[in-house]
Image 1: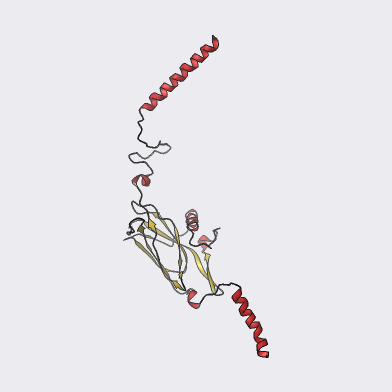
Image 2: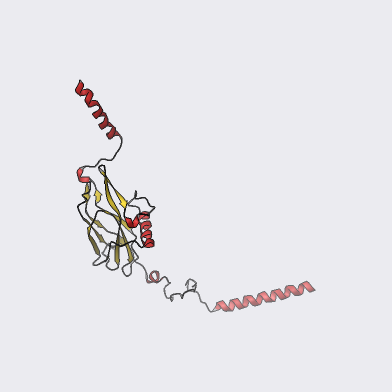
Length: 229
């Protein structure tokens, strides 16, 4: 009976923990801080899914892994310590764009920058953490990749992946979109505002303007004469 009474507090504490909803992770779900990881990025065409070569990718380390009572989370690195953005939704495109804008504005240190050769870039020997991938110089004929976030390790099912693969999609652009002009037009000079090219002829414009001014003057004279009659 005494043994049962002594066991009651222990049993109650176990039940309390189980009912509290606190996250519990098995040993293989906690990252090994002594391990290194990698990120392999394969850029593919949005339509054909073929690999896209050219351009370069930048890698920023945004946050480090923090272990705390059987759980792990991410804390901002020194370069991103003043970020006001929450790291709760790591898969959010909005968060990735906000961090990319912050990195550009604050001129955050780039962890690595590599050219996209044969459609693939591999960043290796990485410490565990949260990484931001951006593209400032896209491949010729393609739009710039949207920034995205990658965690090392990546949690998948009941395990952790330390060598992470990512496959962002690149869309093609026309020459007009690349230069910011319409087909067949010349680039606008600084301070010059161009009208949109719609196939219209421009030589009648001065003629119509002069005709309109003439009609206005004639109407004004006739109205003035009427007032004096």
